[in-house]
Length: 205
Figure (cartoon, rainbow, N blue to C red):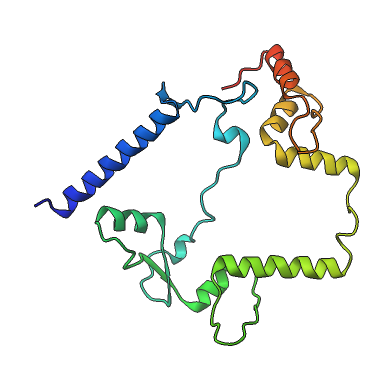
């Protein structure tokens, strides 16, 4: 009978095999890059860092790491990895704990969401939804959404930069004005823009 370590190794092997089969179905792996195939010619293959800022978590302060006393466990990626590698199947123990006072100190803001009836707590997603909904309600009552509060020029610029971070960095690098967008927020003339980029000699990975 296979031990836990052998079972875990086999599970990892099976996962890799399934991933390779999925990639093959999508077009395979060519020279270390995934080729999805069937994409429009105007689509560009770029590195993730060119179109988005990728950051790890905000970080758990080192001065609180390693504490074994406290009401609240703090699970880090390492704790999850250990639980998986040891085939525990669950997070039975955290490597770090914090007290109520420390948790309050680490918070950016303190607020209270009223709860009625038998409700004792909200999970993070519910709490976030309630806060955003309440913020929208209060601002609507004050008429803050009745009209745009920034200039048309700033609105169009921000809309393009938020919608197309890669094209934004490309235009800034080449000293170009931003291309026009259609009603759906996409480039109005993607083929023309792509041809202009190719003519500039800019290499796209």
